[in-house]
Image (cartoon, rainbow, N blue to C red; front, side, top):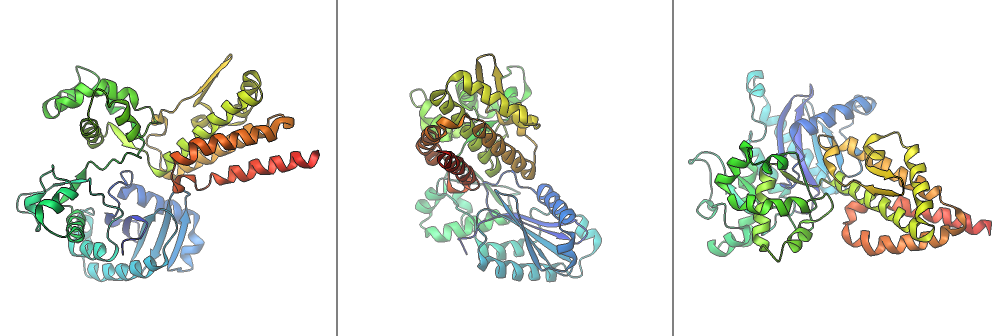
Length: 423
């Protein structure tokens, strides 16, 4: 089945000890066993009644992602997915879960405690990919081999060199595309390969504190990269200045097009991604960026429809109502001037649940700002803001990013209806 939305699967003992972890979405960089098991622990604390009723399946929607928990006799399976749940997946996961319980039957405690949960149960991993496949493997991704020389490389081993993309392998091997995808998927499931060049032009990237060390001439990190990829350091000063928390990969490539080729920029960004100096925004952080930009646009439109002085007053009033420093501290308002800081380092290390709480707070402060506006011009303001959002936000963000944001449009419409009723 290829149309599923599952990003990762974790299976744990009832006591909470992880036994198995597998990603079905190589781009889900933020998902790891500790994160998912931590979520499950939080879910348990808030959902004891559900679990105690021996429900075989329940779901918790955290906004950007859905956590589905399936309980069997000895283990719990947690599936992390995006978008709507697909009913056909339920049966597949139940069957796989039953298979796993049979797989661990008779396994000793010492064996369980020493499992490498990212690669353990290779045959079970192959069954998963046969049943569920991967989410959107791109032909531009470049696989490279991991592990010892004698590890399973399959029929594609001679073609996987860390240079050829999936499309290149299809052309040079003469193997059908669907068979190449299936074999690449199998090797990923076994932990035999990883991918580079996974950034798409629509991805929005942010820098981490590691990029600072690359810009320090005396740092060991810079010296290491200088030996492996000196061309990255040549491009880094200009490239780093463009990674501002808002620009997409495509926009960065275009901005550097006069001095560097697309391939040079993408290869440099791929290296930075590999060492953790940059990250692609997760679904939760994309939503936060969306509402931050929506908030800035709301204030800019207010400056035009009302006045810059009034807009600043309304802005400060909205900020004063917020008690969340991760939100109010991001908007820098001084005498006569203001700006929104798009550096996402403030959100480094926060789990998806906390990020969605911050998203909700941003939505709240956006609504409070608009509610404070003088009502005689609210209809004109709403029309101008709607046009601005349509021209900028709707073309910039995906349908998944916009889920939940429609609540603001309904709220804005209600304010306009109330104003019409007063006339």
